[in-house]
Length: 111
Image 1: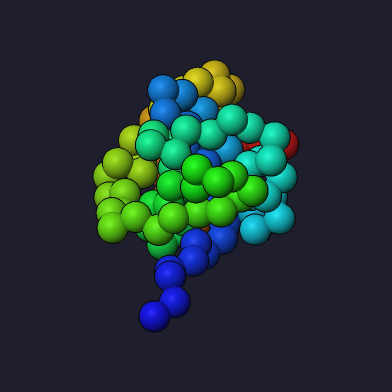
Image 2 (image 1 turned 30 degrees about the horizontal axis):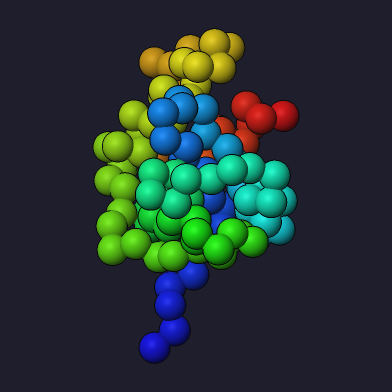
């Protein structure tokens, strides 16, 4: 059986930070993973289907699929926290109906 792989776009969710990092494709994930000190026990990659992945201890952008997902309600709250931290968007007006739409809002903030 093949391990589940993330579907992009995705977000990097860093423990203890409100800001989210938009990842358009596997190449953008590799670039972020190489340039950061990720915490495998706390940081997560969230894919467009709501599945969560942990960065591997071996580094190099390897991911370990977790047996958990982020609920849509938790995702909505995280995107709103991100927008509030950016301080240039009216959080109450930020509406979206799917993980993909919420990720597109985050992408538009990264410019």
